[in-house]
Image (cartoon, rainbow, N blue to C red; front, side, top):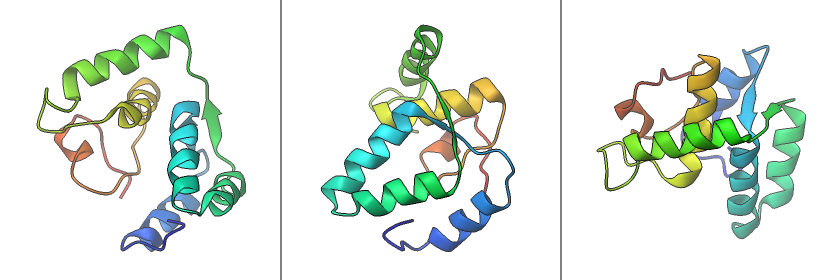
Length: 116
C-alpha cells in the first residue's frame, strides 16, 4: 500500500471499513523488514500506527498453529505455496475466525475468506 500498487486503494478502503483490524506481531515484523529494504520503512511504520491495528502476540500455541499452517499450505507442500511470513497472517485469521486482507492468489487456495 505504501508503494501505491494496483490494489492499494481497495486495500485501504477495506481496512478503513473495519472497526477491528488484527495483525500478527510476526506480520508487522515482516512488513517493516520488507518495507525498510525497499526504502519505505518509515511510511510503513506510519501506516501501521495510523490504522490502529490490534497486534496479536506470537505465543507458543500460535507458534504451533503457524507451523501446522506451513505444513499444510506451505511452499513445496501445497499449491497455495504460503511462505513463512504468510503463515502468521493465516494463523490470526484462522484462530480469530476473521477474513484476511491479501492480494494475489496464494491465500485463495487455502480455506481463508478474503476481505476484498
